[in-house]
Length: 201
Ligand code: ADP
Image 1 (cartoon, protein in one colour):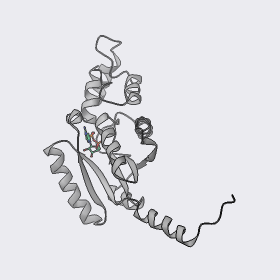
Image 2 (cartoon, helix red, strand yellow):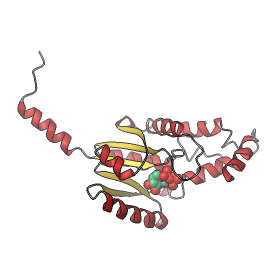
Image 3 (cartoon, helix red, strand yellow):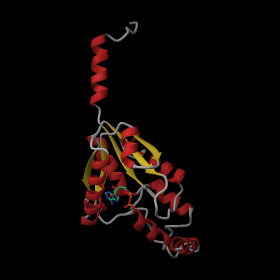
Image 4 (tube, protein in one colour):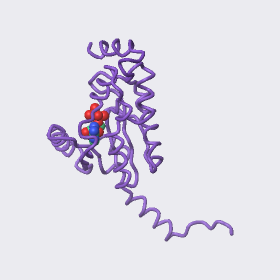
């Protein structure tokens, strides 16, 4: 059967569907993406039609991975999720709300681990609301196994030669190992000590 041009009714239905699709932006430094981040991305995919994982290019804190590495590692991590292909990974700079507006995201997703995160997120949400009232913030509570997990902790433990393979996706563990990090102390441990000193500077 030949393809017929879409009728005006089906065109209207597609337009309606597009307009009602909810895009969520999940922003962060992701240095590197760990299992807590990945869990929030997975749950966002179950809640929203379109999820953009936004990798912030130049945060104030010192980074272990370059911007390109963080983007590539986030992509590799998302590819391990059954629904991960639906998530887009994009780098961005500047204000997160401005980027949310640019990509048509109605929602910014954040993960909450504890009251420290809560206080920070409340302040950020109020600032963002003041800047762009039409973008809402949705906070998802960290699932129990990931409560204690942060990028800082992963980097610190790996720098001291601790095995972080249970805390991060496979690609991130491999990338840490490629930097000589996350190797048990009785392994070939010289690079992690050097890296630890570099991170302290
Ligand atoms: P961090 O260094 O704390 O991991 P990011 O900027 O990379 O910082 O975090 C991006 C988002 O992921 C933030 O909303 C943060 O609260 C959330 N997040 C970080 N760690 C976890 C975790 N263990 N569980 C759930 N959400 C988390």
